[in-house]
Length: 379
Image 1: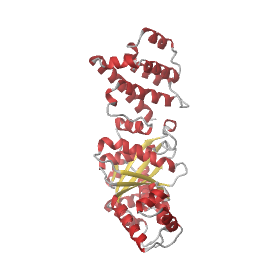
Image 2: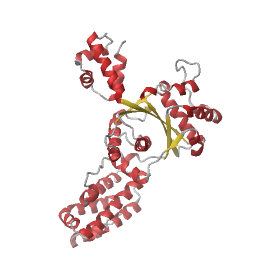
Image 3: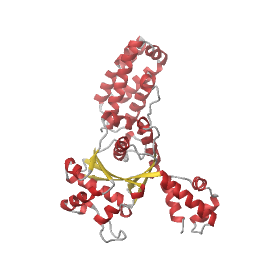
Image 4: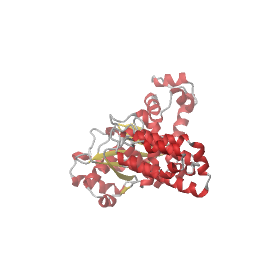
């Protein structure tokens, strides 16, 4: 067996360096380089490779294949997922239904080119498939400028993934496979996986290891399966899809806001909900990101200011006068107000130690943060 192709795929899928992969296999980096140049391994190296591959296969317990479909005007985006056990990743049932009597994938079977009745029959036939299929609906367009580079286009997929992980309780290593798209930035996959893992911490004793990668749909029966689900979501109702074994999943507004916080890099510490300064810094960070948007709806700024009035009232007279003089014509004015509040950290600490007042202020501030997160997350 020639290992070069397999090792290159492992480097790509697991986001490893060559040295890290060599260490994982327990071979020297020079040996790995020779293997990647199609040189045959020694008997000892071959045994080490076989042990490593068996261990890796045992660790990887699930694979999730993702795809999407849009309505004609691209106002809505349907994201779909096919969840399979690692040992079922060959998708034999799907292959037999879509490619009968065909040993290799000569030409990809695309759902968009099939009439409704054919898509319906294929989905009906897949009810007997051990794979689980899901879909979710995302309103377009997303909120690209709020996220770090590469994460905006992944947001609709991460919404469905978050819903799957919170409802399925997956364990071990889960590989997420996306179709190859020009607007995906592979360098952002690791950051997206880390954000998703951080989001899942409250739901798991041990958060699964998530690896996000991409593959050409022509070579992936799993992505093609999700293609039929996404296309079916455009053509049929959720009730019909449920009959075909497809579950519709969605995050609640609160869950969506939490996911948005993770993608924005605003993660709460263990005392986050009860610490007024931490909450205020969260709000400042988010408003600072809002100032980067091309469209900055002023009513949102006015509403946010009203939400934090209880804190402004507690400021010294001079600080309140300064705030009163701000025109609040842009989000930068709101950012200035928050900066003034943060400059009186000692006073805010004193207020937070006053039991009744503390509860009111923290509740209002949390409501303000939560409200703003939800508005921006919904686009």
